[in-house]
Image 1 (cartoon, rainbow, N blue to C red):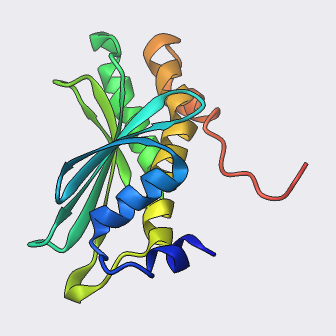
Image 2: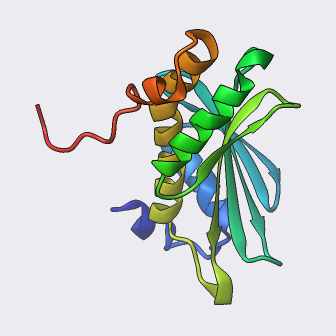
Length: 167
């Protein structure tokens, strides 16, 4: 049985309920912060990523924020912002920002579900997967810019595109 088939047998289709079900299914640590918000930790190769999803019924948008700590030297911030721009050019959905006050690198995306549309478990799973995938892909490049004094262009060489096929 697929995730959708299993989940659609229940009555509730609130987007955060779907996220909670996915977190349980994937055995991620999570906390249901409120009826419309959930926070979880997803383990990656480089980091454990903090992911928060919140539903706004007013905007009919499921907002996802994936964060990881990063405290680059102040003198490298211009290069970090340039690296963010280069990374965002390579992201099809979502984008990176740096929250300097919190010392957090963020990847954000909003899934608009206007007109009473429903998010499927596959859409939300892909949303979370894309956030973790992009963070994993660009984390080494951000580190090289911050700590190895590489130019953003040089550092982006390590941010490989997705591999296809088998080796």
